[in-house]
Image (tube, rainbow, N blue to C red; front, side):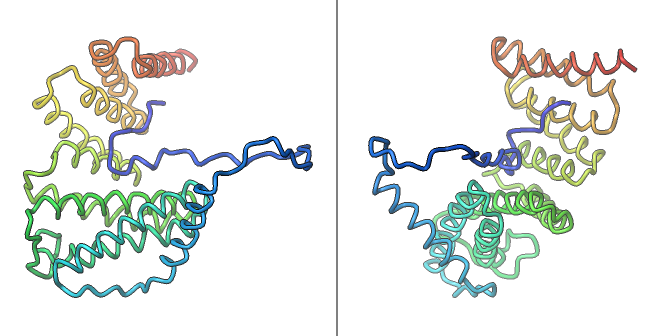
Amino acid sequence: MPPRERNTVPSHLDVSAPEPVDDDGVDDQIDFNEDREDPVDQDVSQFNINLTELIQRLPEDIRWQGDETSALEFLHLARLCDATGDQNFENREFNAALVSYLHSSRLREAVLSNCSSFPNGTGNFSFNEDDSLFHTEYMANINTLGKVAAVFRDMSDVQSADEILSHLLELLRGVFLSGSPYLDKSQILSDIGFVHRERREFREAASAYEQSLVLRISKYGNFCEQVAQTLESIAAVYYSMNDMIKCMTNLQEALACWRAVDLYSENFERVRNDIEAILSQSNSI
């Protein structure tokens, strides 16, 4: 099957969690010659534990004072929540990761929702520097919500994951319609396609990806990494729709892209293997 797209905002969705260590049969005798954990690493580990506990104590009803200084403080704390959530997720501490990510999103949206550029924004707040900070934090919030959806998925909470993905779609459509010069519209469309694909809305996903493809070809030309990746995403959607003709057409175009961009890369080999696998499936039917 064609791979999932790798160049989207919620890219963590395909990150594999570390496998549990199998210590059966391991001698418990202490080896005094083995390497010991660095004291600095121990301090960092303890700091992460303390930060996780602190984040869990944050109130759900976060109120922003309305000034830029407190806004920047909120956004800084949101970044700490993101970093802590990433560490929790890597350690398979899904509940702790969920708390950290949700607080990050609440902190950002407490500020961003008071900006007129935010979908259904309720205020006229703007940052004094320039509007790029708003969009940087806006996209960071989208990325965090993608992580929330990933955690819910790993916890088998399909309904909650779908609710987050629905909110993500609203935010992505809002920023796309904003016409901001700070954002790559082709990437936003690709993200929209990804979210539709996660929700198994394959026709909408194909439409968004194909619009992204047009913009990327216009910007980069026919043979580039971005175009090849988008063609693979389109092929994956059509594979899910069981439309093997369109799937193969897009895979062959992606193969031609990778051949021109980097013939000896793993990307070229992967797409060629996908094509051979689909041909093999067709011949066995």
